[in-house]
Length: 381
Image (cartoon, rainbow, N blue to C red; front, top):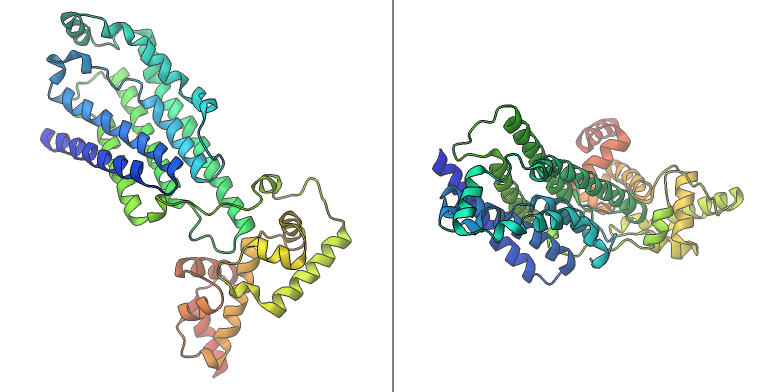
C-alpha cells in the first residue's frame, strides 16, 4: 500500500512537470497559461519534496526539509489570478498583485534562520519537528486552509459573474463558458477540505501516518484531474473570446438602477427588435452576438440589454434561444423536415450543439425534443 502511495505522488509530480512545461511553451493565452503553469509546477515540486522525505533523503540533505513550506499559501492566489486572466477581468499580472503573496513571503522569511544552522543542528530541528511548540507555524497550519477557502470563493464568484456576462452578449456560449475552470476550482476546494480535516485529526488524535498522508494523495489526484480536464477541454489552452463593452457589462444587472431610456423609447426599440427578428431571422446565425443586432437597430449594446431586461425579462442569450426554440417547433411540424433528424433541425434553427439544444428546449417546453416531435407528429396524422 505504501509503495502504491509513493508511486501515485511520484507519477503525479512527473505529470505536473510535463504539463507545466507544455503550458509555459504555449503561445496562445500566454499570460493565463504562465500562471497556471507556475501553480502546477509548485504543486509538482511539493510532491517531489514529499517523495524525497518519504525516502528520508533529508537525513543526508537536511536543507531540503521545509523547502516547500508556505507553498500552500501560493495556490489560492495563483488559481484566483489565473481565473481573472482567463475571464479577461485583468489583462496582465503586475506588481500591484504582489499583496496576494504576502503570507507566503512572511513564512519564507521566517524560515531563513533554519538555513543558517549547521548540518547537525538542522537534523536536531527536524527531529524535534518544526511545528512542535512553534506558534507561528501552528498558526500557519491553521490559517492555510482558511486562506485557500477564501480564494476559492473569490474564484467561483469571478466565474459566476463571467458566465452571467457572456449571456448578456452572446447567443452561443459553448466555446466561451468555463465550466471546466469551475471544475478545477472546486477540485482545489476539495483539497483544502482534506487539508483542514488532516489538520483537525492531527490535533485531536496525533496519529502517525506511516508514510501515508491524505493531503498529498489529494494533491496528486488534483494534478491528475487537471491533466484529464485539459485533454477533454482543449479550450484550457486557448484565448477566450473577449466580452464586448466590458465596462458597460459591469453596470448591467438584473435591475437597471439607472435607466437611460424612457418608457416610450423602450417600447419603440422593443417593436423594432421584434420586427427585425421576424423579418431577418438573425437567430439562425449560431454565432450571433449583441453587437450585430445593436448595429442594425442603431443603438448601444447597453441600451439593447436594458430593453431585453425590462421589456422581455430576459438576457440576450435567453432571448435569442427562445426564438430558436420556436423556429425548431415550427420546422418539426413542417412536412418538408419530416426526414430530418432532431439534431439537424436544431442546427437549422440556429443551435450549435446537441447538449445546449436539449437543455434550452426542455427549459422552454418542459419536455424533450423527441417527446415533442412524437406528440406533434401524432396530431398531424
